[in-house]
Image (cartoon, rainbow, N blue to C red; front, side, top):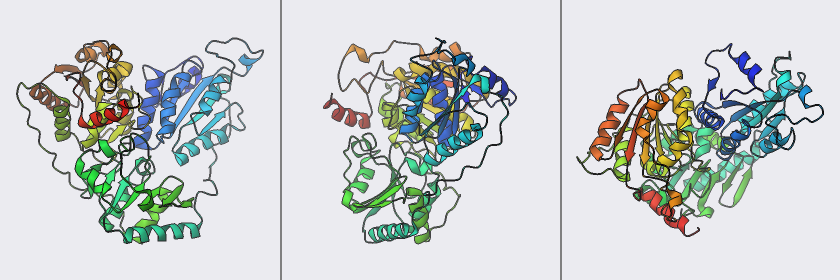
Length: 522
């Protein structure tokens, strides 16, 4: 549980102190929300705790992101006690009325409940957690501070909804249709999306690809939903911002594409520059599957994959393939560091043992060709909120202590949540942080020039000194960056921050293609 204490949560915080390490404090509530989001992406559910008003309303952005990107986060806020509300007084943190925050949270969560009665509290809490995990969406619980600690009954078991399983006849018809479509294809291919990761279907995709020999690409939001070391893995398919031209050609030329749990969003499709014929595509979402224009309601991607594994005689396995060799990168001594060289160096060195966290912007688009292990890449590739990557390292480091967080973040986004680095060492999280210092917002510059794209200049390499933990270094050449990166990766005992200076107008090919299209819409 991540959060910031406040007077409306103090009793709950005090009770949680009985369980050392359970509550992890952050510098800011938004940082807590992002940390809980990252934890949930890797462990299945995350929890954030904040006080009412000034704390809870700071969580709106991270909660909206969790809804948009299908992340099961439980948001808990302590609020004024029932007795304090009599007469509708002007209590601190209040906005219009005592229900303002509840109304706001209802718009960005799948389930929201006001937990004020000991008789109904167990059911409401159980339903919240069950909904978050079943729907892969955030939920909200608001608890008045004067009911915390009151005795109540045990948490009940909450069964899945009665329509969780599809009609057997509809499922069989869908599987027949999909199997016929794939069997008739000469050049079939699979696209793995974010719900493959959220619903734990990685083994199913692996087994199907192995049994049927299908090549597999993934979306930008679904990156690392399959392992990049798998022999059938080809890369990220996102139209004009695909990881390379080979994977783009593979999918564009396929005569049948099986799209599993993917968002057909602007960033996932390179601003809709993908070339997939809907009539020749199988698209499976969380609760419906389309074969061409025929829809099978209730047959979600989980049901489809379980059925296809059986139909193709695929064998589920937890074994991992041997790591592929990363393409070498040999730095040129004294040559100014470019975006291309930076990402090629990262690609040659990152993978197993790392959770790569890429901030929205060129940190993300330039990372399209990185090769993380399965579930080893986190990014907000749909909602695209800045400020996510640094606090996400806290959640990722605690969720997967066997993998070291490696953050790739631009200077503008780093300024938003950099202080979250301060609390990581005390809980044993020691990330590598690469701050790309290109003097501002590189995503916006190609679309429209102006001083508004500049950010305050800071000594990023000095941030470890400011937060009292770790070591920082500033580099501006290829060989200096590679040396600093190797040294950082070899030292897991502390935060290692690398301030990587690149030219202001130097961006990855993927971002250049994207901004060329975006600029037409400004």
